[in-house]
Length: 296
Image (cartoon, rainbow, N blue to C red):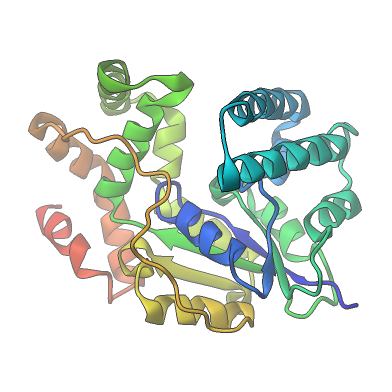
């Protein structure tokens, strides 16, 4: 049986990668593990095996606790996630780079699937050398290794990212909103380097263009993701059957919190180079970007 090709969903953060992962996870030609973000290559890049193992142990504990009250499909899905947590721990617990073990984990139980994958948005932050390694991960596979990068209006993506971060650590309600406001102030004061890095489309796209062959990279816009012609284009890129998508379900929606007007203008000023770069490279940016582009 031929081994499937590999797709990496490499970002951007809060630009629809979770929704696309869910679509592909349900696709009959694809096989995805229950853990969306494996963080394997950024773990290797940073030497962060222990930190990654701690995160998996914590996630496993949450899922195991949730199984006590869950029923039906939710309980079955949680059980699958726990099993995948344990299997993944056996891969990264080796403490060294082991690409065959990584591929074996993704391939387990693929049952003739044409595509397996790893959707980790932070891979877009990796240096060129690591992206090149990923591109040449599985020589001889057909289809070969593919990369999908989704972009979203920079201000909308930034504010969604900040709202998501406000909810980290289980925070909800006022506590999450207060934390999001703190992050916004720190970002505008020159802090929150991770937020800055994830907002830098120019740097990400330049690294991707230098490291990934054009035929292996598909760039799409979040604002056009939820329509069938975009999904068909993604399926064609991956060499899988076109399957109708369900667009009435969103995944990982950030908490509701209005962007204060006093922050909107300074954020746009900081993001102006991103709007300019994308507009120059992609003359057909979605109309949803236009209002903010005019302001910058």
